[in-house]
Amino acid sequence: MSGGIRVREERCRGCANCIKSCPTEAIRVIDGVIKIIPELCIDCGECIRSCRDKAITVNEDEWELIRSREGLVLMADPTFYVQVGAYSRPRLMKEALEQHGLRDIAEYASIAFDLAAYASAGIIREGGDNLPYISTYCPAVIRLIQINFPELTGRILPVESPLETAVTIWREATGAKEKVTLVAPCPAKATLVRNPVGRKKSSIEYVVSVKRVIRDLLAYNVKVTGTRTKAISRRWLLWSISGGESRHIASFCDKGLTSVSVSGLRNTMDLLNELELGRLNGVDFVECRACDLGCIGGTATYESRFLSQLRLENIETEWMPSQDEMEEIRALYDKDIWRLVSPIQVKERLPLSQDLGEAMAKLREMDAIYASLPHIDCGACGRPTCRALAEDIVRGQGKETDCVFKLRDRISLLSGEIRDLSSRLPHTIHNSGKRRPSS
Image (cartoon, helix red, strand yellow):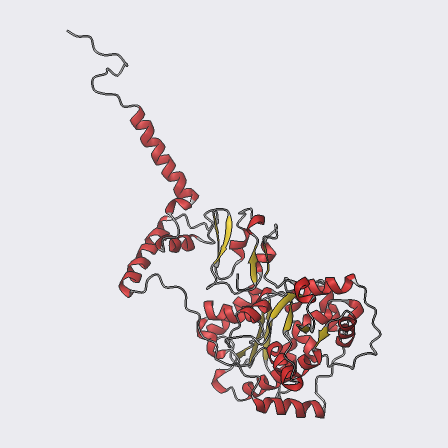
C-alpha cells in the first residue's frame, strides 16, 4: 500500500478484530483477507493494535537496504530520543548514531520545532473569530478531520510539520542533497513521506520505524560520553507527549495560551465533536494526538510509553530560546518556510453515483436494505457495521446473504421449500405410495 499501513495477507486469519477498531470504517475482510479502503484510511494504527496475528504492520522501507547506502541522513521524530535510558539526551543519541555510522540532523529539528511554535503563536494571537485553532502535528488527526469532521478544516493551523521544515532548513543551510530517512513512531508519520497533506511531495525520501533503528542501535551496544557533540535544545522533545506542543507555543504567547490537550483516538473524537458543536468557547488552541499519551504511544515505538513519559517528565527544559536562537527563528519566519504549501481540504467520501438522481435512489435502497438487517454490528459479514454492509451491497460490492442472519433465513426458507416439494407426489400415485387399483 502507498500509505502507512501494510497488510500481510498470509498472516490474516479473518478474525475481523481490525474492522471494529477502525474509526472511519476503512477496513473490510473479504474472502478471509483484509481489504483497506485508501480513501477512508487515516493511518492511525488502531488496526495494528487490534491484530493479534501481526497481519497488519507499519509500511516502512527496508532498513537493511537504506543502511547499506553511503551518506545516510536521519531525520528522527522527537520520540526517538526518549526511547533508551542510556541515551536519554539528544546529544547522547546523536553521538551513538554517529558512532554507528549514521548521520543525524537533530540540531536542525530543534530550531524547526521552535519555528513551528513561534509561527503558531503568531497565528493564534491574530485568530479572532477563528479560535480555537487545531494542531497540524498529528497526521492521523488531520485525516480524521478531513473525513469525519469536515466543518473543522478551516480551524486547522496552516503550519507545516516541523519534521518537514527541519529538512528544508538543513538543505538550505548546508547545500546538501543527500536523501533523508524519517525515523517514525507510527504509520501516520510514515504517511508524511508517502502521501503528505498540505503539500504535493515530501522533502523526505524514506521512512523506517523507531523500533527498527533502536533495535539495530542496541545490538551494537554503542558507548557514549556526551563530549563529542554539542548540546541540543530539549524543548522540541516534549512534542512527543500530549501537552508538549501547547507548552511550547505558550512560551511565545505574551498573554498566555488557553489550550486543551487530549490523546487517544476516542478522546480525540469526543473533543472534536465538542468543538464541532461549538462548546469550546474561550479556548485558543486544541492539541490532539491519536495515540495514547502522545507520539510515545505510537505503534512503531520501541520502549513502553510509560517509561518514555517518565523520562520526559524529568527532563529539565529551558522554554525561552536564547537571543541568538530568537534571531534565527525570526529570520526563518520571514522566509515563510513554516507555512503549509496548500490549505487542508475536505476529503469527500466516494459518492454512490455521479448522477444525483441515481445517487438518491441508491440512498433510499441502502436505507431499505439497512432496515432489513439485524442492526447488531457483529462483523461476521466482514464489515464493521450493518450500515456499511448495506452501502457495500448498493455499490455492488456485497450481497444480502453476506449477513449470516440473512443467510440463515434464506437457508431456512429453501429447506422449507425442499421439504414441501419432497412431500408432494404425482397425481397418478396414491398418497400411500401405491397406484389405485383399476376398476
